[in-house]
Length: 388
Ligand SMILES: Cc1cc2nc3c(=O)[nH]c(=O)nc-3n(C[C@H](O)[C@H](O)[C@H](O)COP(=O)(O)OP(=O)(O)OC[C@H]3O[C@@H](n4cnc5c(N)ncnc54)[C@H](O)[C@@H]3O)c2cc1C
Image (cartoon, rainbow, N blue to C red):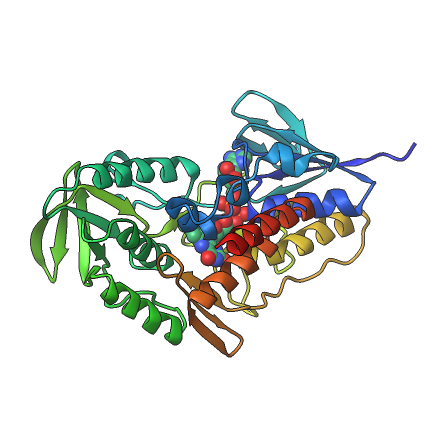
């Protein structure tokens, strides 16, 4: 009887779920185990549309039961806490021990507080369904009992901060002053110029107050302490949403793996962990090391593109075949800029407004994991727009 190799994938997000599906689809010589503590996949780029009600929960956060049904993937609903690299064995929080022939580490990122006091206790992140529920509760409270001069502070004017500011301004028109706080001198640093200009116009149109050169020093239940051009300032606010930065917290590796300055696991160009034949990494938790190429950004686009390379290289390494290098193909960027508005820059093409918003949603729904869910989510979307 031919022995089936065991491949364990840690984390069922963009990189992990897509890799697990590709492995299970392409090969009968491996048994695939996915370890993921959440019971759903989350398509984070459409989290704003879930907040506004433009899209529905089943479309943006399908259950793993549904996505994995009849796929030949064993799912363990748990969190990996440690990995013994010498014995090729991992341990989960629930006490399960699992041996592997190959391991794929795709456990994503977490909120980065930069050590600012009060963030964990008083700020709301925007990365998970739990975050979404807290924010929905805050928005509903503000809609139900509007009071004069109420403020919401969003910390970080990167993609999430800007997109969220526009969406919240549309959900709370003339009810709340939205303050977008950024320690640098501009919004969307590193973004495409067309998108940045569209975003600036969208923020101005919605009276979002942009505060650049402002560093948050402390978050309390009803105010923020800021350092603005060296001057201390207290900003009263009804809520703080923290979108500044990304941290990674992979399970404890024994012996420890080499990491980047940001704590990401360093990989070869073929996505093997540096100095390890059996462990691969992808998505936000991984950084590619080497002079020949710069590490790609921590985005869903990169994670999705890495998945087929991860699946191929896992199988190739088990069969003693050559591995592929990962090369990122930059497809451009799309931003949601309020309800029914978006901007797109892709391969020399630019577009903004309601048509861009529909195109963005359609492109994302087509990128959903699993053919069945992709078709159902797209059909639901077409049905909604047909009614409208
Ligand atoms: C609000 C928001 C909007 C975004 N918009 C865009 C966008 O428009 N375009 C874009 O390209 N990118 C976007 N991103 C970034 C994108 O979401 C990430 O780059 C992408 O999710 C990374 O994929 P991943 O597979 O590495 O991690 P994730 O998709 O985060 O998945 C990681 C999974 O690992 C699980 N996990 C964590 N620790 C463990 C453990 N110890 N054991 C087992 N499982 C574990 C988690 O529960 C999670 O399900 C956005 C992010 C956010 C938060």
